[in-house]
Image 1 (cartoon, rainbow, N blue to C red):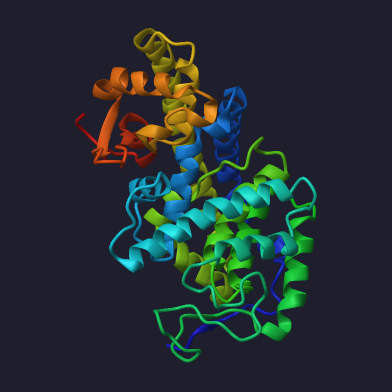
Image 2 (image 1 turned 45 degrees about the vertical axis):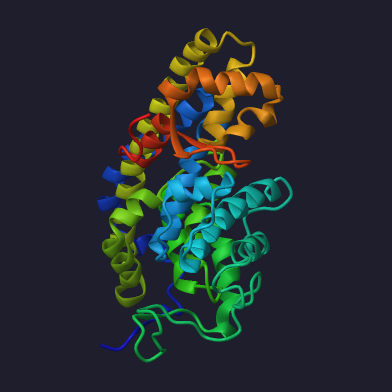
Length: 375
């Protein structure tokens, strides 16, 4: 079967070509679910601390869609100073996830000066591709040679999809940016089309999938549908990867923007409800453990310790509470007090090497399953 090619002359799709009768019943529930998530975020006094494990998990899952195998636990343990994995392949996987987190954080900061645009994405791409596979693929610049989507090593003849040609890319990106900042009948349908078109353009030689998913929370943040760029869709997309890629393919093959929009709205609603469930569980855990640790540790630094655990749930014993200014003797004492009830030892202390611990309750919520157990 010949590859599907980019849909020249068919973007943006006229509103009249979209079957709004199919979409209207989905828009309301998706909007309500997203609004509930925003309301919860607005009620959390320090959302970027409490939701740090979810943002880390988003980076893991978005990278997993592209083939990486690193787990949340592996990424956080390496970041905390754990031993590098023996496999160079796994180390590259971990670095890709860490780059993803850095790229979206940098993009969020830059949005105080720039709109969501090609320049901002080029900067994010340079961070995303730093010191990883694909680092030789012109990081921070649009492609100058054709690229293809398909099985590893595919050619332009054997690919599933051929994105827009480099010579047409600047015009294509201009159309994409203009559409993204235009007024459309519905902002969530618009976001879905923005994402699909970016993936169809595939403007960089590598990293397009991760950047395309990064655009989702940044767009919602720019449009003030979220107070923080903290919407995590990759869990749903990774679980429905085959349908995700097929729906994107059908946009160019069949001009099926409606079918893609149906999939996207269902994804938004489902994931918004799951994000809300996880965020609420994390918020409740924080309140419960904040009271618990103050009683257990008998220290004015109890809240500071909890903030540390939520922002860095895998850590070296010597780092506990250090960024919050907790004195070293207090940190050592609190470790002894809470270790049995709260922490899972990933690496025992040995010589001058400190132990590495995991805050298992929090990580299990982020993962949606028990990845750590015991004490």
